[in-house]
Image 1 (cartoon, helix red, strand yellow):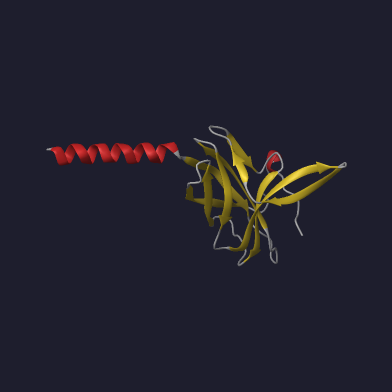
Image 2 (cartoon, rainbow, N blue to C red):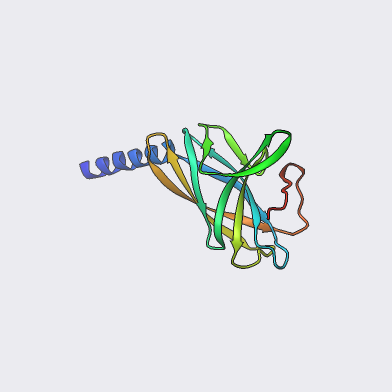
Length: 155
């Protein structure tokens, strides 16, 4: 009987730990690419239950993945790759709006409508723990538009 009790306590402790560092990725999508296009934006919402940073993103469909931030400097909008993106506890961060976005670079193949783009996100918490989160981005038609998710061409 006691082994069941200890098993239950261990399961509760594991569940509490998983909840404490819970990161949710939702509404992940990318627009299908045109022939010869070497880059694409991925847009998604991410929420962490505790203060954390999005450190890295990788995908087998791209040679590189970068987190970009747009910033107004001297009257000119500039794009810059960032090493990490803060994820304030309990606040939804929109990658695709407000100047923050993710770029798939050096695409290994075109993104086709209906495909799914696998992503691995590396999260670091304030106590230096790291966690890998798996997500999939739906590939929508090339003609898909979203007024709050418009993306400018990167070269």
